[in-house]
Length: 296
Image (tube, rainbow, N blue to C red):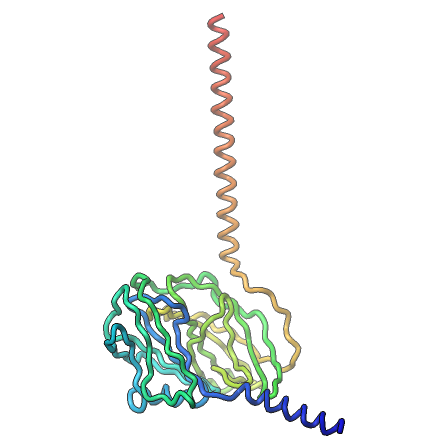
């Protein structure tokens, strides 16, 4: 009985782990609830959700709706991930109206088969035409390889900092140095972190552990403003063992220096004002003493 119980437990655990990779999903960006009149939209398909992305405009129709009116979306760019992911970048035919609320719908979906939640945004931000820039260009931080029930997770973590008025995506181009093939994708950063690679179920990039890679980065914000000047290539080898490299929280040295300089400037100004006040006070005392002596 004991062995039967162990066998049942293993079967149940395997089923639960496998279920974690089940489902077909459509994801939407921007993540926030407010947008600008010239906002763009990114739709990502996972597993069979990729077919929805590939069939927009034919089998499936995507649009924005506000006050019962539909607003068409145009395709800007479509990218294919290497492991069960793809994405499409869309923009409205005309600028959206400030103060209005818009909801994104996809017509023709079988919601029992595709996991999709409509998303709404309020147009309350000012029109953004500023090109995003780097405060700190991406630098490699750590990497890891971890095995799960459905397969391995293989990630390389980069730290960065961007200056912009809107949410940003990180354009990422990875080149296999051994055969000179490249793949690109727009990644959603998590605060100061950029993760390239794949999870156990899906991912934007797949690595061959025997090869060497180069990565370059660009920036695009939620209004489609793009910094097209890619960073210098960073060479890396994918992680090959489950030993996780030491991890340090991402910090932008330029920002730290700027804050330090600001603090130093503040201290210097305060010190100068104190010295000036003491000097004025001393002059006044001396002047008063001089007058008293002259009067006596």
